[in-house]
Length: 164
Image (tube, rainbow, N blue to C red; front, side, top):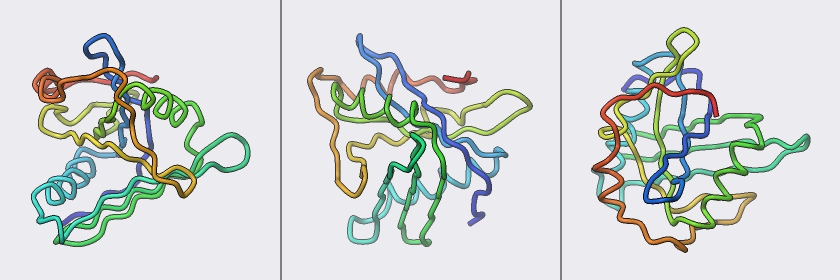
């Protein structure tokens, strides 16, 4: 499987049922790289529990930023994505919204000129309930009950993205 190249991180919150579902968009330099990334995610989702793991970890660094590491272990191999110096605003918004909802969404997009095009959110999404923050596992808190199947059904087929 093709290994994705350069990647950046954007915040990608989605309004749903009166709240914002927090999200992260992994932005790749090409459509092929974004599709390759979600190829690993789809392999992970289909794999038996004993053959897979997915961990998203953020660690604070000096100067009000974060380093992010995503590790996806699935039957075809291990994918590791490291993103250094993630803006504090992205991780702070994610953590803030996880005090209201129990999951966040992971999406992928790719750069087209000055814009970011998302892979179809309906077909290429991952709902995640945990995040490792400075070495401690953190979970979203459901103060607002949401029907996650309804959220998935309302995801658009395609969508452009603007800077948050």
